[in-house]
Image (cartoon, rainbow, N blue to C red):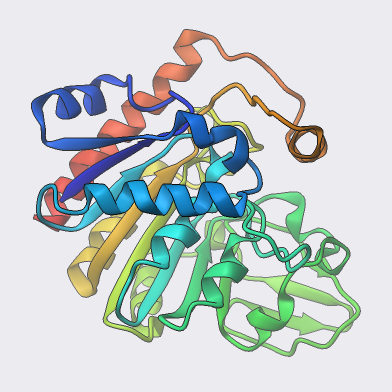
Length: 307
């Protein structure tokens, strides 16, 4: 494992499990705080190019599968930047409380990065696991890329959600069935997790997999984030990582979903954050400490399965 911290917002680089590895030289820290204002929520072209250059300067350090930690889920579109560096056919397995499938506007942003990933020729499919969010309420009104779901390029498996009201025709896939004007999703909360993982492995069309984890897929007891949170149990997430690593070749992974104070240099991003984020709060040190604990568990898991 090649552990990398992209220090955009200061939320992860100071965590003991990561700082200890950075100080010991077993993890690399890419300084990027100066890019945060132009990366949060929506990435500017200049910031994206600069981040790629800094990542390239770090490529020669260490061996093994790259694993990135980079802070708030406001930066989840960093995943699409990282995927642009993959040079082989890959399936993205995406754990998140939000589908991140918005088709408009067509920018590199945290709510649309799945579509940017699917534009890459090497990305064959995105499998999203765990949403419970309101993104599935009348998804067409929210510019959801349901056509990609119907075509099988996105497979979406909510942890728990009511049927979605739709007007288009999307048929039936492994993750939903359409009845009249509603998509009835499979709720993984009602299924055997091991059986689902068996099915998941079989449906992955490539030998290589990229893992991306937004910790807002977990409940408040296992994460403190800038976004509303889901209900996926941590033990299910860790079991999925272990199973995927045993059955497919993991070529990279990234983790976000830490909390950081949203700071913006322009009113455009500030306005987007105001309407997209849940009511703002300032967590206590005790609430924030859960992120360091879960990140340490994820690092231990990656070390074990990627060795």
